[in-house]
Structure formats: C-alpha cells, structure tokens
Image (cartoon, rainbow, N blue to C red; front, side, top):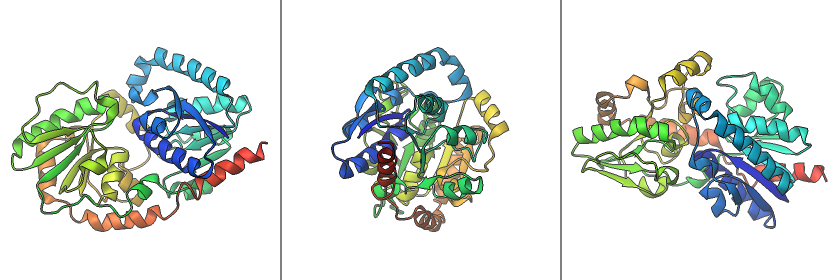
Length: 356
C-alpha cells in the first residue's frame, strides 16, 4: 500500500504520526510519503516538504501569503502525481486540504480525510464539498459522528490518539507551586501570548513556570527577557507536565492534552483583531477549547483577546480550578476505548482493497 499524507500544522503532524504508526503495525510494508513534520518523519514518512514548520493561520495572514500558498498547491499536486498513491490521507488543515481533496477526486484518487474541517462550528457550506470530494471521513471527536448522521452523511469516530497516549497518566500535583505555560505552536499565537505569560510570572515569584516550546518554533522564538522563575523547555508536554498545579493553555490540541493529564487549566487565545472580527460573524459554537466543545459545557474557563490579562490569569491560578477534575473524568468516558489500530486502519484497508 502506498499512502501520501498532507498535514499542515504541528498538531496535525502529531495526529498523523499516530495513524502512521497504527498502519505500520498492521501493514508494515506500507510506503509513506507526503507533506508533514518531524513526528511523521520519525514514523517513516518520506517528507517532500515540512509544511508545519511555517503554518499560516487567520484571514489576514492567509491573504498576505496568497502567492506562497499558490506555489504550495502547484508543488504538492506534482509530488502526489509522481508518487502515485493508493490513497491520499489529508489531516486537518482545511483551507489547504479541501482544495487538494477536490483536485484529487477529479484525478480519480481515493481520498481519506482524517480530522475533518469543523463544519459544525462555521462555514457549514463546506460539508457538501467535503463529502463529495472524499471516500472516507475519520474523526477524533466523538460528537461529530451523530452530527454528520443528522445531516445525512457518514463519518466514523475512530477514537482519539491522545486518549490512547495519555491513558493512565497524570501530571497533577495539587500542592506544588509549578505552572505549565503553553503559548501555542504558531508564531502569531506565541507573539501575542508570551509577553503576557512573562509579565504574569514576574508578579508571582513564589511559583515556578515551565514554558513548553514546540520544535517548529524554536528558530523563530521571540527574543524576550525571560523572568528568573521561568524555564523554557524544548521537550514533549508529557515530559514537562509531571507535577503541575495549574496550566495556561493556548486554544488547540494542548487543552485536551492538559485535560487528559488531569491538570486544572485556563484556555487563552489572542488573535489578529481583524481575523477575529471576521470569525465572530461566522462561528456558530459557544466555546473554542476542545474540552468544552466535547463536553458541550464550560468545564474549563476560556479567555479571549482583552480578557487575557495578568490580573485575570492570577485570579484563576489562585482559584486552582479543582472542580475541573470531575469534568475531566466525564471527558475520558466520552472519548471511549476505540483505537486507531482497531478502527481507522481497518476502514482505510477496506477502501484501498475495494479499488483494486
């Protein structure tokens, strides 16, 4: 089996790597190529381009990088055509991958979308385009299966790789004075959140702060003066968050990881004001963090834009948020016991075999 992958962000790189690993356990002779990152490469994917190293997010940012994106479309189509895959697996990154799915379908390729666009949140018009240009849609969010079914479309919940990876692990130490800071994996996020985090640390000298720095942003990390009680660490979250009493987490996959480790948290986000204003006109959900979206309630506090202030963050740290722990147990139950190896790999194999 020959698989071409496209994962355009650091979180997609991690999720794709989990699926690559699951496929290799069942089909060890599979040949993998694609656009992705270091995690996929470690699992044996021959990278044609490291797309997650420079992710582009936000309406304004996409417009400014339009020429670069057009060239990327041209190059990835060429790479796919040369590789001649049995199946194309697209991972998240909808602004890019939906267009590739449409093109690939016209070429007669089998297309799998792993972690589809969040059409339930905004731009539901993409649903028709998504289902028409894919053969199989695989989700890691349990509520998506029933949402798609209600719209008359098929989607398979195949378990969440993070739930597998973090099963039985904890990073919570209620009596510690250690706080984990996760400013994100995109340059735009980090530039807006890191100064606030550093200012906060100065006002709380009794606490130790650990900043988790993603490998994709080491080269572009802001040149700021680091407070004495902050340590910037280039390591996976599992190695860093071992004895924390609280976490401040940028919106995204990290909020679910912190929840699975049982650490109380606040989820924060600061975006380009114009991009956010446009998004607010279209987004149809009341939450932006994964724990709250999955549970459909405000299990963890969310702070947006001007709400992300030193005073607000200090108040949340002082409260400690231990009431979140019961919500985390519900979250574990909702994610269930499905695994990629049991569910996703079988569905992909059936799709490939049906075309031979």
